[in-house]
Length: 171
Image 1 (cartoon, one colour):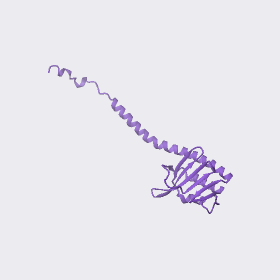
Image 2 (tube, helix red, strand yellow):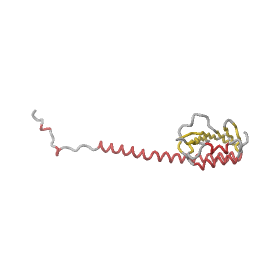
Image 3 (cartoon, one colour):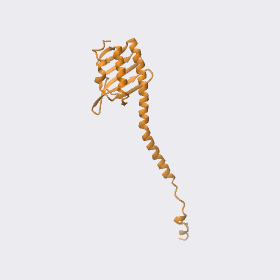
Image 4 (cartoon, one colour):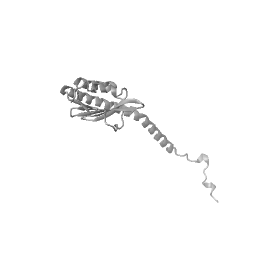
């Protein structure tokens, strides 16, 4: 038992514990909080940027079908030639309703309406219900990129007037 107490260091002579573990923990927590705060903002900004690109592509396609009168729509199993004025009404409606919200997967069922912009782009519209409210899921497959979103303000009936057989001749 000799020498046992000789190895004990008095409290005031001990080396302080390393605070490196606490520092690493604080840095990790700070990074997680920072990412959690930045991600929603970055996602929203990306959605807005993609929405502007979508509108540019939709504008270009609308201008082309306006001059050639070749916007075809499949609505309730009927093939229609959408008039140039109704083509611009659809475009103006999409612009007026805004970017809506980020969409998930496209609905499983068949779309309510499919619009064929000549041979270059296809826009599909679904009537979806979120939070008990009727909304429109939009999917646009353009020549350069694809975009999908959910219109948050109006339901499908708002978009059906320029797509009705009463206002457009058969294809």
